[in-house]
Amino acid sequence: MEVLKGSGNDPNDPSWNSGAKVKVSLAPSPIDSQPNHYIREAWANKEYGTTKEADVTLGSEGKKFYIRLEWSSNVEKHAEFPEAAAVFFPASESPSSPMTIGTRENPVRMWQWKNRLPVQSKLPKVLDLIATGPGVFHPAKTINGSNQSQSLQGNGTFEDGKWKVVISGDLDVVVGSKKMGIAIWNGANQERAGLGAVSTEWIDIDLAGIGL
Amino acid sequence: MTTTEEKSVSELHGQVAMVFDLNKCMGCQTCSIACKVLWTGEEGEEHQWWMTTNTQPGLGTPKGWEEMGGGIKDGVLQPGHQPTRAEFGGGWDFNYNEVFYGGKGREVHLQPTDKGDGTTRWGMNWDEDQGAGEYPNSYYFYLPRLCNHCTNPVCVSACPSGAMYKRSEDGSVLRDEEICQGARFCMEACPYKKIYFNYARDVAQHCILCFPRLEVGVAPACARQCPGRLVFVGMKDDKNSPIYKLVNEWKVALPLHPEFGTEPNIYYIPPLSPYRLNEDMSIDEETPRIPPEYLESLFGVGVHGALDTLKSELANVRSGGTSELLETLIVYKWLDLFGPFTTDPSSLDRSPDSQAVTLGPTRK
Ligand code: SF4
Ligand code: SF4
Image 1 (tube, rainbow over the protein chains, first blue to last red):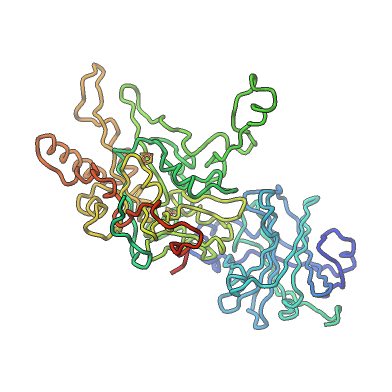
Image 2: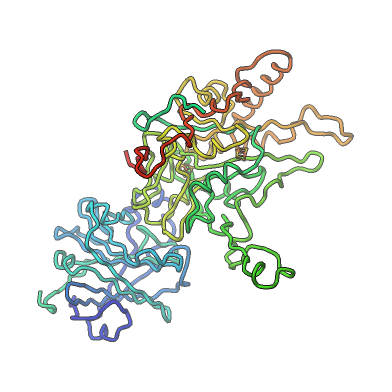
């Protein structure tokens, strides 16, 4: 999909309207791929990954890449588990499906936004993670062995039953990958870790519009 | 005080176990406070009590924890309930301003501020001293509880990110808080419901068996601070330790809820109780006041043999004999409780540049 020149961290900024909005289908990350016996047993007969689709718009400015995600949700704002959303980028040797959010052999770089509670004001809104399976998320810095330079940002608003969230990070990651998956967790349904709704296909990112 | 046989961390290997003698616990909560003061004083930890002492029978903490599921049965991990903030209760704010500075000191009384989330309707010792039974046969006893640092830690098995592990130095079950993503499956899976959630930091937290103290030869705070001198600490497989004898030879120390399947490393000497009184106040020598079936529901079938052993040893001493078991339980010398962990913490060099720092929650 195309990348808009411009935009920014405000999901309601009118400049987003000039970008190409693409509807992405989501499905629950497979129960058989969940990382352990406990989760597979406890959730075998429970519904999860309940968000069916999300609208995606992409933007870029300077060295930054912006992703706006929009999805419908029936959430009370602060359930026990937060509403959350992520975008993830495979290395060029990408696995066949994004549905597992990476595999041990093919890790993905994941930027995860969480709807923070007021008491969590000191925590980052967007986490920089390496994912090797549904729920198998590790902070990128614990794997890279250093504090990497990523400055991730994010903002979310909830209005009229709809979340609008912008996640932004380094354009370099996107240039290296050119593919993206997304995931949404309906916090009110106790969705977290690998129990999210994930894009069923990789999204190809066309960087020609920003001269790359 | 002298320090004997200090253990350095490089020598530590195996499973640290503890035995609580319930016949000596007076429910003073010094253990709970010792732990609270040492480990859970920061934002997000207000409601966390890694060590608690509850009155049995009772609903305990979190409220009704024994019915919340989790554990492992026939090799299958059992789904469990994640205790809610309201079921833990506690961590209250009080109306200090209103009472002390609002000019209403005569009309309002000091009380927890109700935030509408149910947390003021329960707490870590809410049903303290209620117990069960009808006068004059009412009964209760105290049950101190902490994470059991299980041999089969289902919390570790349930963690998707691999943040939790059991380390080989002392068998403590720990969590790398850098990796924990706040998914809380550990809280569901643990049948003892001894894991708390830190909302301010988005991580789960639980008892760390005072591993930084163990590493420098100091007993866990709950054990060392207990005025009842009833908490034994030691290496589980040390055949000369009181722990080994109490658990394996005399078989008087039992795990709590063995049917949960996680193989706890915290053991309890079950409580003896007086006999029941008949209506005419004569003694019914056949019936102990605490129903044996209730104790069996807590400690398994082994509880009957354990109580029989304790009773026959008592009878033996009363009739002039001696009992190594009772001598052990009396604990003439306080430091005999702590196995290799007898170091006095005040004797340690705790200056900032001291070398007596710990490994931290390293993964081995
Ligand atoms: S008591 Fe619970 S938290 Fe502690 S090791 Fe056992 S299962 Fe894990
Ligand atoms: S400090 Fe000792 S006597 Fe007091 S409640 Fe704890 S275990 Fe019981």
